[in-house]
Length: 127
Image (tube, rainbow, N blue to C red; front, side, top):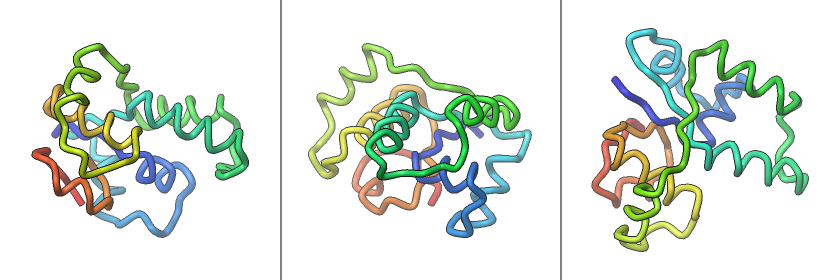
C-alpha cells in the first residue's frame, strides 16, 4: 500500500508519542507498505519549530536520518499538486493539510491521519 503520512502522524511516529495508534505504527513499519511524507509536512515542522510551537527534541538533521532509517520517502511539491489544490472544496482551512490532500489525490496515495476533516474530501484515508 502507498501511504502519505499526515504531519501529526509523522511527529507521533518519530517521537514515540502514545497518541499514535498501534495500527498506524504497524502500517509505517510494514515493509509491504511504501510510506511518504510531504515536503509540506517538513516545511510545517520547520516553521512550528522555529516559532517555538513544536519541540521534537531532535535536530532537523536527525529528523532526516530517521526518515531514511524508516524508509519514509520525501514527496516533493509539484505543479500539478498545486493545480489540484485549486479544485478542492474549502472544507479545510489549513494550507498544509490541503496540499497533503492534493498530493494524495494526484499520486493515488492513502493518507494516514486522524484529522476528521480529511473525510470530507474524495481521498483514500486510513484513520
